[in-house]
Amino acid sequence: MFSPLRALGRRQLSQIDLVGQSLSTIAPATGMIFIAAWIISAEPGFAGLAAIVGTTAVVVAVASCITQFTRRLAAAGSLYSFAFHGLSRRATLTVGAALLLGYLGISISVLANSAVSLLGIGTALGIDLPGTAPLLVTAALVAGTVAVITVRGVRFATRAILVVEACSLVLIGILMLAGPDIDVTAGGPAASESLPFLAMTVVFSMAGFESAAFFGAEARRPLTTVSRAVLVTPMVCGAVFVFAGWAAMSGHADAVVAAYFDGTASGASLGMVIAVKAGVTCSWLASTLGCAQAGSRLLLAMGIEGTVPRSLSRVHRRLRTPYVAVASFVVASLLGAGAYLCMFLADSIVFDGFVEVAIVIAYTLLAVSCLRFLRRIGEDAPSTTALSVGIAAVGAGLLGYLVVDGVTHGSWAMPVAVLIVGVSGTIWAWLLRRLRPESLTTMGTFDSIETIDLLPGSGELVLDDDGRPQVVSVQSGAGFGA
Image 1 (cartoon, rainbow, N blue to C red):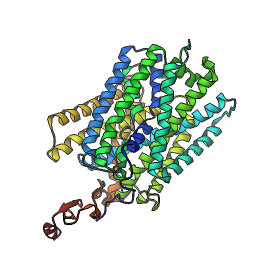
Image 2 (cartoon, one colour):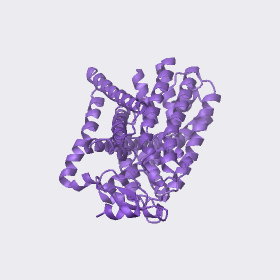
Image 3 (tube, rainbow, N blue to C red):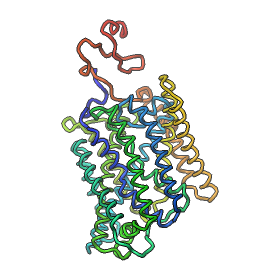
Image 4 (cartoon, rainbow, N blue to C red):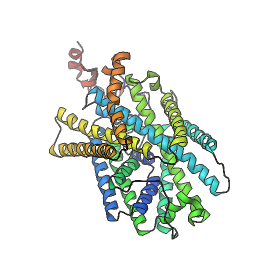
């Protein structure tokens, strides 16, 4: 008997590979820049740092909920696969849709910004290529490179992006500590000055911390290493973002933020501008690659189940990577990046808000699933119950605030985003029931032990009434299948 995920290269990713995957998807170096820019412009004082710490604590609590699954299951669908074990099929599809929209939205944003940053380096060096066409060509080149690296092999990709992200993170950190003083009001994107907006920015900047969970089937010790990566990543990023907030409050981050957004016009030297843009560009590129890896595994899991076209479940025989899913995700990201560069480049608040809503909905439903899953298997405890209920309440409260605030101020972007993502699972289930009803009975794909994993004489694998593999003794196995 074989695992449904056996086509992937099993037992090949180490702990450091998984941490690299999660860190790269987050792109903490870019998060440092945007959080510092918000602190500089809004001047919230220590309340801003408190908001970052509080949001980090909430994300770590979400990570704790996720580890309740990663300690028991290894899957390629991450939260989507986990949600099935505690939610209805419609709610599970809502999580899947929210997760797919979230990762695709992040990929679109970082791919577009990769192109902008690369051309920004050229502009700083005197090679000015104005217009949208150069941006689109650059984005296409980045997308092609990402697709090739992702298909090339998961270990090569995770280690490459870890090195790139680590270097960019160290570079930005050093520049914030040792950069020159610039007496100028740092530029930056338009932003609300409310602390909930900062909380959403931190959530958006940490989105993807759980991406290591997409590689449970490919990790050497998935139930241990994936859980560690999921827990450690938001802690590290939270500490980095608090450092960025402190640097902004103390004036150390002014030069870095101004150099990134205003270039040499801010008074920063050419070397400073190139160093900052190079560090942030590397972070954008690493995040683009991390999203492609995670998004392709999500499509793979859905393809195996049949909730999306089954062609997305094809895996390259030699490279052991889901090449069709990779190509599909990267092409969708490139098309989205083209639209982003034309419509949202100057002001991405609406776009980012939609992605943030999708992520918050996925995390909120996952907390509900965690509560019901642990109760179903009889392993719930007061601590896990309080944790799950607390996360669900915080997520629902934040979504409610966004809806009420949007309606009150006549800004319908957030309420519409909540509505679209909220009904996505219901619409998806309705379509599957009419077009591919059998797929609704095959949801919940996760890695499982294979016959080759069993020690001689320890038992045999059989399928239970739900089609799940179970280990039974040789004597009882004969009766089980009868």
